[in-house]
Length: 192
Image 1: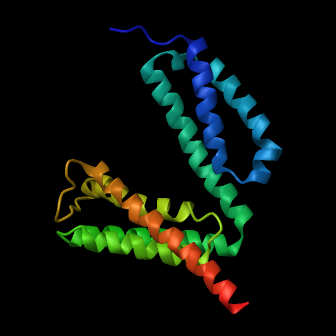
Image 2 (image 1 turned 120 degrees about the vertical axis):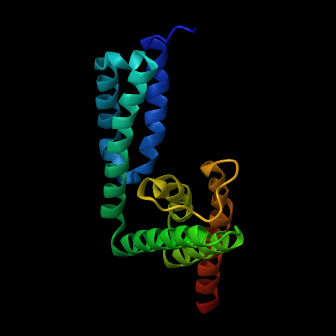
């Protein structure tokens, strides 16, 4: 059995991971609050001695990630305005539709088409930050396959070898989103 990493070696790794998480926030917000957020994170990591064990580190990061998801989404929504909010809602709806199609079919082509088309449409609506839309649309598939059985809902075709195989939907999602960006800008160039 290997000894757990010391707090001094885990700290730089924790800090690097947190700096990557900060990229989810808008650039203006990072400029204003990023240094202070990193300082608070480092102080919290140093104070939490439980992070020295694997279980303690998992509990620590669970709290960090839950806070990160809610605050990053809140900041993105407040900085983006109505069009970003509309695109976010559309991405969620297309993702849920793709999950529904996935659960009702025993073929993979139908949900892949739903993911591709959904990402395309959302990127045409809001091309700025197009990388977000395929993530939202495509990640609804593995989330629904993970959460569905908890509520007694099962897909017709199980994911092989496991639910993480549905992450392959990210490929057509990104293709669709960036085709949507190209169509949006090509259409704008033709009209002007």
